[in-house]
Length: 126
Image (cartoon, rainbow, N blue to C red; front, side):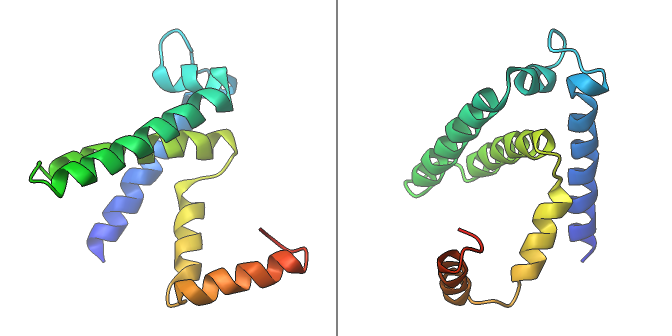
């Protein structure tokens, strides 16, 4: 599990840098890409998330036809980075996502989806 700890540490460090780039924390939109995206608001970083997700799909499809699989890693890193900006905007962290993944561990995806439908009907979640 050492690699998981290292990964979580890397995500925590990156999350701290992103947090420091918030304008409220002294981030300068003229000097920082992250500060600029956060300053522009959700439309800016959500657009980037959509673009990066598309690039992940394209890299994976290219890999199916012989392209370098490392491109998938590169594009997923970009996607995660922009998702982390969204998390920061909403005062969430990678630890929140990891906790949700831990909560789901051992649960069938089919069961999870069925439970969400039941809860949605009862007015819980969607």
